[in-house]
Length: 366
Image 1 (cartoon, one colour):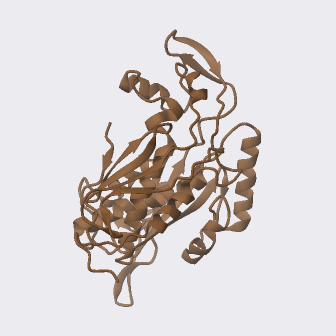
Image 2 (cartoon, helix red, strand yellow):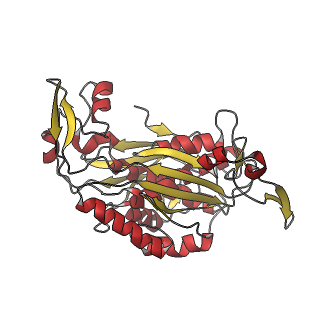
Image 3 (cartoon, one colour):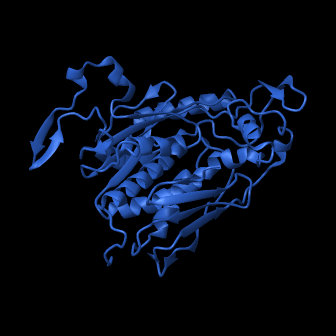
């Protein structure tokens, strides 16, 4: 497996859904940063299961434990290890599914890749449970990029065919956390809630989109031609389970535009170069242009559904049907919002370190 991502701000994740713990080891974090562990915990709380009746009933406290790399509340420059314990494990349902791969999951591909040695309980290494490690690394990255003025925020932009109107930055900040689907428009949020509840009643699931914004990134950040800013962001975001599309700026809508519509004309405001529109999503040539970086991440519906599904027995090579029982989200999108934010923040910190906008040793924080 390849379990490490990043160039300068690098982190390695470990653990499985039904193992002892899930964790992360971060290398390359600047020394001298005063860590707010309450903030890291609050980010984990946004992702944790059991938040509402729209999520899995698995009840995990997800309390962060710092093992190394932070001394007297400050980063030392040494590797930082953080873990959360898996407290509410119930693996009984997965023994009956051992040889019948669940449609939409990585059960069959993991079997083909690792020859049956993988931890198959709850998806093991491929479970969404492992996104907690991404949030720990991203929550720390958020704090560090905030020291140079960079902000990252996300929201649920679509559930099924229900789309939210484009919100302002102020609306995202003020209203995203006001409802269980994390949509800043309350009227749309209520429709999204209804759609998820209907899918749940039907023993089904539903997908959607998360939109993420990064504000105040200075121009000139990126490493063409193969470590472009959007290329690294896309790689990081595609590592999140269930992600099937990543778009920047106007994304796929650019295919229906003419150049006269899609180009972002330059202007000068308050002595700074900017653009009148932002169809490129703040990135051109793989380099930031100083405008907000915007990306839209599409999540497929949760593949675990309590309906009969066709599969095969990998031992007998006979076709069969299965009914998946257990604790699953009818829609993972609301819990994915902090995960998308975290991966975005981690990549931005990596590139800000590489460009010199964030120093390896931070100034003393009072």
